[in-house]
Length: 474
Ligand SMILES: *[C@@H]1O[C@H](CO)[C@@H](O)[C@H](O)[C@H]1NC(C)=O
Ligand SMILES: *[C@@H]1O[C@H](CO)[C@@H](O)[C@H](O)[C@H]1NC(C)=O
Ligand SMILES: *[C@@H]1O[C@H](CO)[C@@H](O)[C@H](O)[C@H]1NC(C)=O
Ligand SMILES: *[C@@H]1O[C@H](CO)[C@@H](O)[C@H](O)[C@H]1NC(C)=O
Ligand SMILES: *[C@@H]1O[C@H](CO)[C@@H](O)[C@H](O)[C@H]1NC(C)=O
Ligand SMILES: *[C@@H]1O[C@H](CO)[C@@H](O)[C@H](O)[C@H]1NC(C)=O
Ligand SMILES: *[C@@H]1O[C@H](CO)[C@@H](O)[C@H](O)[C@H]1NC(C)=O
Image 1 (cartoon, helix red, strand yellow):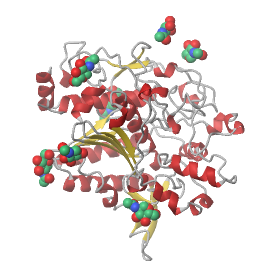
Image 2 (tube, helix red, strand yellow; image 1 turned 180 degrees about the vertical axis):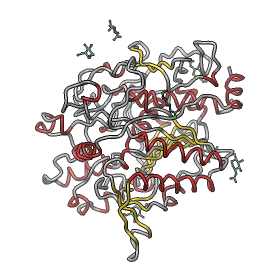
Image 3 (cartoon, rainbow, N blue to C red; image 1 turned 135 degrees about the horizontal axis):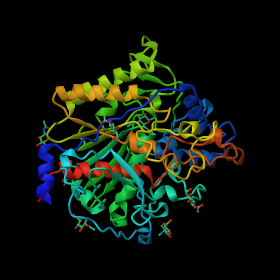
Image 4 (cartoon, protein in one colour; image 1 turned 30 degrees about the horizontal axis):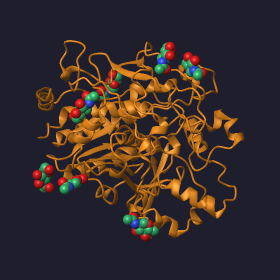
């Protein structure tokens, strides 16, 4: 078994690459994004509410605007309290009994094709309520409210019962102990926006059940820009770093930022990157924040300096520049014999039911089944293949400079999952009001994903790769 893993590592294995798609409707996306979390923010908040918001806010940087009066009223003490390490010590009754029946092989091939030919991103969703979900929402105390669909009233849980079945092979069964062994003395860091935070959150839930409570903790260094889940027995961490545009921007505060008025320093990444460059495994993403307006404001110079130059630029062009800044940093600073790099492909949205033959004006709200995988290569109108191409170009370019980045190709498999979004069953800064819940066409979140759910499968793809590329430890 280990021999196979080692062989796969040297022959460099599967293609988890790529994406494809169409481009429409920036405007509807913008409007929807704005509505997601304009959650009665104009109402007066008591000091207590404010504090709750601060605490929740430590881990809920969001894909939506914040009112400026809120930004002005943040007491500094509360910001600083975020630097305190939060030790979570819940009764051990919360631990979950895992009942995995793992196959020993990293990849058990169902056909004669070799692992190097198996494209994990090409496959089909299979209903499987025996092995899925891999954990329950109430068994993972770390699930953020923005992904807690059951807690916020979702009643149909069929979305948790789908297994991704690649055409040419099986995904290895997720084994949390095995993964923690792979991560021993290592850092796995997810860097990007709230979609990546969802994947981080899923990974934490996937591993936490096998760790006794005194040996797990959560902390928020750098004012909450980083969230660190630590498994102390393994000296392993699973971290999320908030940088929705990868490069520096005025949205770098994980709680206080405004999507519509974002300004990016397209040439600046050092402030962020020094906090994750030495990680062992890096998983990047950045997509939706570039999608909301055709133009984006780019700043040359610093936010503080008087003579900075501001220029509105086509978002795609700015994205390309940001990827170039990101590439340049990686090329120079990454230790090639230590760090493995992944880029999660774009996470599709389900804002328009007409895309999949539903009623015009509806969205993902009350969807309970995936789009049929028989519709080969289904692609929603929220998916912009031009952005995928820019990422691929950046990665090919880095490859030619001797640095390998793998695409975690989650786009196509997620395209089918119109049933996997929170819609109105979530809480961003505060629960939706009854009026808002009654208007899902405006307030449903069809961007993020419920946990447990689709991001678990993204992590299973990542797990499959980590099994292949990490040499067996003695
Ligand atoms: C990602 O996976 C889908 C489905 O297999 C495939 O159509 C697409 O070409 C892949 N993208 C890349 C860049 O490999
Ligand atoms: C999970 O991995 C651990 C460590 O490699 C191993 O001891 C255990 O048998 C695995 N669990 C299953 C169910 O295969
Ligand atoms: C799984 O699904 C089948 C078919 O819908 C159903 O009969 C069965 O009760 C379900 N099992 C569980 C454990 O939910
Ligand atoms: C959930 O949705 C599925 C698919 O539409 C349906 O078959 C099932 O009966 C629903 N379950 C409940 C509890 O409503
Ligand atoms: C713990 O892990 C970190 C990386 O996250 C590493 O730098 C450090 O050396 C490890 N400590 C020990 C005692 O191995
Ligand atoms: C945290 O925020 C405070 C106040 O905004 C700032 O002075 C400090 O430099 C920040 N610390 C870090 C590590 O970013
Ligand atoms: C790069 O990483 C390897 C493996 O961890 C380590 O031995 C080496 O010292 C590192 N190189 C530098 C320049 O830090």
